[in-house]
Length: 433
Image 1 (cartoon, one colour):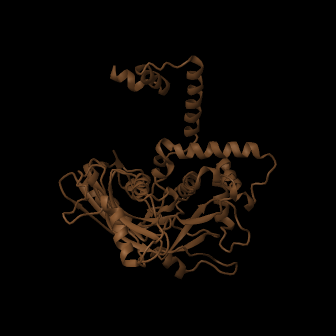
Image 2 (cartoon, one colour):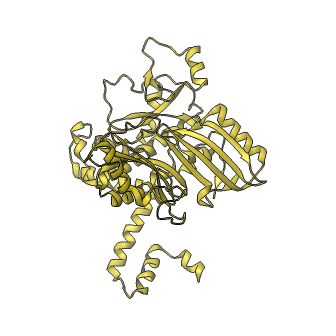
Image 3 (spheres, helix red, strand yellow):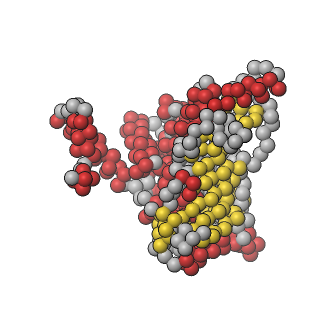
C-alpha cells in the first residue's frame, strides 16, 4: 500500500487527503487542478537542472551524506564593518537552528512590533543548519542613548543569550533562535553587505577513495570553483523559475506593442512586494548566468580570456574591459592565473549602450548565442526593467582545510565571499544525499 501511495499522482494524493476530512472534490475541480499541475510540470521540464550543467573536473563519482544532523552544516556570517552604536536601526546577531532567514525575520517582527519590511539582512542562510547572521530592525530612538540600550535589551529579552549560554526561555536546541549581540547603527544592513561566510561542514559516510576526495579538494585551491548559483536560488523543484516564467509570459502577452527596452518599465511588478520581486527576478537572472557559465566550462574558456571579456578585480565590485587599442598581455595573464582578476558573465537585463564595461566581440557572441536560447526570460527581465550587471565566473575559497575525523566522515572548513555558494563547492567534490 505504501508503494502504491508513493506512485500516486499529486491529484490522487490531494483527493485522498481531502477525503479523510470528508471534503470531496467535483470532477471539474479535479480536472482544473490536474491541468494546473501538468502545466507546472511542463514548465519545470523546460529548465536544465544544476546537476546537468558542466563540471570543472567532470561529474564526481564520489558520494557522501550531507546535513544528517543540524550541527553538520554550520555558517558564521562576518559583517566586515563596524556598527556605529547609534541610530534608528537596531542590529542583532542571531544564532538560528532549523529556521529559515524569513522565519527569523518574522519572529523578530513579532518580538519588536516592527513591520516586516523594516527588517533587513545581508543574505539568506540555510534553514537546515546552525547559522549566525545579522539583522537590522528599524526602531526609532525614543530616549537617551544609555536608556535606549536598556529599552532595547528589554525588548529583546525573550531571545537574548543568558549567562548560562542559552536563551532566557531556556528552550531545547530544536528550531532554536538566540540573540547573541545587539547594537544600534545609523544605517540598515543592506542585501549583500557582509564580507564573508565561514563554513564548517561534516560529510558523513563518504563513498569513494580518500585520495580522490583529497585530489578534488586540492584542485580547488589551484583552479578555483565554478561560481554557479546554488539550487536554493531556484526554489523547491524550480518553483521560483516556474513562477517568474508564468509572470513574464502573462506580462508579455498583455504588453502588445510596448517596448521592453525602456527603463520606465521599472514600476512593473511592484505589486509583488519587494522581497518576492527580488527573489523571482533573481532566479531568472541566476539561471541565465548558470547557462553561460556552463557553456564557458564546456568550451574550456571559463578561466581563459576571450576578446571582449569584461573582467572583475578580485574581492571587489569593480569591473574593467580592455580598450580598443589594448591587447591581452603576459601581465594580465599572470593576474588571471593568480586570481587577482576574474572573467565575468552576465546577470542579464537592460543594457546601457554608454556602459564602458559591456561585453563585446567574440565574448559577446558567446553570451548572445547562449541567452538567445532563453528568449522568454531575457525579454521578461528587460520588460520589468532589470539592469544588466556582471558576476565572476569563478571563486576561490579562503582557508580551505579538510580533515578525516573518522574513516568515513570528512570535515571541511572554509570561508566564501558574499555571493559564492558552498553548494557549488560541494557539487564539484561529490554527490550528496
